[in-house]
Amino acid sequence: MWKWIVKGLAALIIVGLIGAGTSAYWVLNGWNYKKISSIEEVRGEGWRRVELGRDLKNSDGSRFYGLARKGSSDNLMIYFQGGGLAWNATTAANPMTQMGMLKIMLSGDFTLDVSRIGFYTGEIFWLSILSQGGVFNFDHPDNLFKDWNILYIPYATGDLHLGRSTATYETKEGEAFEIHHTGALNVEAALDWAYTQFPNPEKVVVAGSSAGGAASSVWVEPIARHYAKSRIYQISDGIHIKTDVLKPAMETYWKADTSTHFGFDAGPAFMEIAYLSHLDQPLPNVVRYLHTNTTYDEIGIAYMKVLDEVDVDVNDEDAVAAYWTREMRQCVSRLASSGLPYSVYLSDQRVEHNPERTQHTFLTYDGIYDGEQGSVRFIDWLKANIEEDKPLSVGVSLLETDQVESHRTN
Image (tube, rainbow, N blue to C red):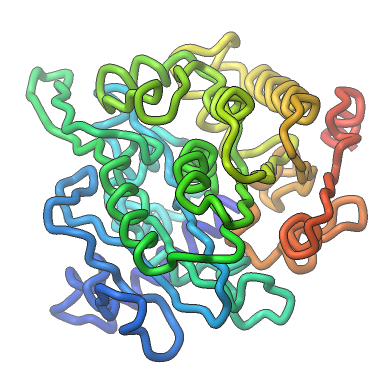
């Protein structure tokens, strides 16, 4: 999956550069999207760029904007884009960029090394949105979201969409540099816009992949409170993280203050804590929590190797993989027995280029329409839980250690 992410994005960059000519800068920064201030301005299909304010910033100081698509139904999806995180000076100084992805593609070296590709998206990868399929393939007849309104919240702040600060870091040479960890401010502006444009949706899906999946587990709380009469569904796609670096980063650099803004104190098992906090803070409507993971997530494990504080030798890749899958399975098991309305889709689908690793996320890939786990397609799992309101979990047998190990070694 990682290899095809790079190739797909790089190909789009090349096409964009060729098509743009001297306007390449504007194309790469999304300026060719048709801009709107109201969803009523939309005529026809396709994404529109939503201007949310000149003061809103990405990590590099470029302007933040949202993306929206008008549907024919009263339903609404709010999607949080993923893209890594920055938790100290070393990681903050090394973001992913679109041109960096192009260089990796041209080099032909697709080794999944987070320290080489960058730790977080430092700019809005708007071109990658064009290459996304899955729930954003609006031409597929099985897509239950093809007629939904969609607010797409890009991610380029390195803070899990939770930051409220401009942090000053220092390089090894002693030079100071600033990173705008303003993800929460960007989200709040996007949500304020959505609340005025979509006042009474019947159903609301709050979804996100990877880092965006962590964000959706937090932001579903204020969204559910606002849409108190709507039926709410939350999707955390391809996210499991447990590390001691998160809390210091949130406090020192991001100024996230989850206690004040979301009612829970962040800790190492961040997403699990966010989920379980909803048991102590009952929402006005029932939220159905949908969680996806794979047994040996190649990108999840790659990030675990570079995190500073985990209970395993990060130089031993097999040990890191075993640690990651054990912690993920234990997290899913606890959530499944917590009393939350919780359903999981756990898969052991392997990536072609590394038979010991499994894919990272599902929502934005067309494999959701034909790939199966236990004879159940991912899209049918979504339909059961969201369209039919029938709770369904898939791949539960993979929570058992021996079952996971047998799938990995066969």
